[in-house]
Length: 119
Image (cartoon, rainbow, N blue to C red; front, top):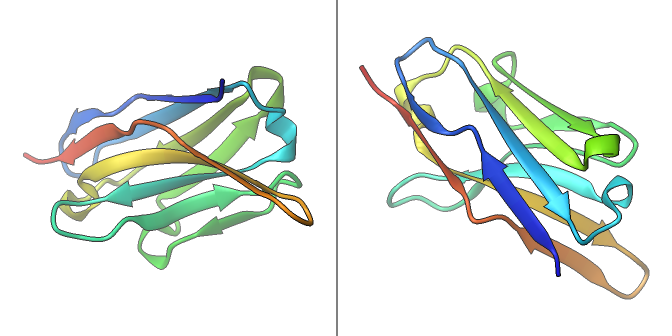
């Protein structure tokens, strides 16, 4: 059974920092591209950042220079370090694991963790 378990969300003041973690089980973690998505109330889910199995990273423009994604294959964990947080970063943040073979897409999601940026 595949599980992605996020942690690290919470309430933080503007300008503050949080570090999200996502621990994966039931998959060969090193094979998977890992991503962080977020969904704010009334908005569509969007990709925040992802990191490939080869450690290539990608960020949405609105978080470049503020957020850093990283992974530790030995711990089957992906992280999202979020600095200089803004109220518009408020959302539920979801962890995603994705692996594509020639014929199959393996696509798994965590349950989400709430991040609220407010004074």
